Length: 249
Image (cartoon, rainbow, N blue to C red; front, side):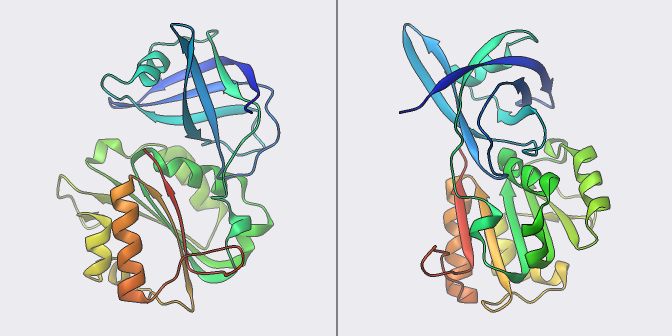
């Protein structure tokens, strides 16, 4: 049974609509980078809850969440309209296995994300820790519709300075930009060898592990291509593989 505690709003950061971030302070239990929690509001005497991954490192006492404002969405509308000092309720315990402790040692770690699903990767990379040393190179790919939806630039800049084995690749699907950006959907870019060529890395089941986090269609399509085209396998605790996924919707 979920134990709920009170959280105080520290800041609401509004990016280009419909994206925003909330920063709160709450006395939660320790969590692992990559995990998520539950945020809830009360409406008509009923608790409405949603899962949100942490953006912040577990070392940071302020908890941050990256959110998309959903039209007719009860929780996101409520969160969007909050002000510093307001209260919400949050799960004391965190959840999930989308963490580096679940990933076997490999040469290349690919972090694939769409939209706000970059959040857990930012938590993982800001935290660092000994698990990071399991990989020779970490490639973070973030796909959005438009360039103005690419946020957290300051944090990404710090991450680039922190790791000399880190690569960040931006992808947009609704506007063609310069060569720094890839254009299209991640599954097609993988299937057409565009990502391999851009990164100058050959993907195979001996040297690569893919963490995939984002909308369910992207996760499903990307996983199918990795299995069919590259012969990668799902990662299980009893049988380590190459693909770890989390739907983010």
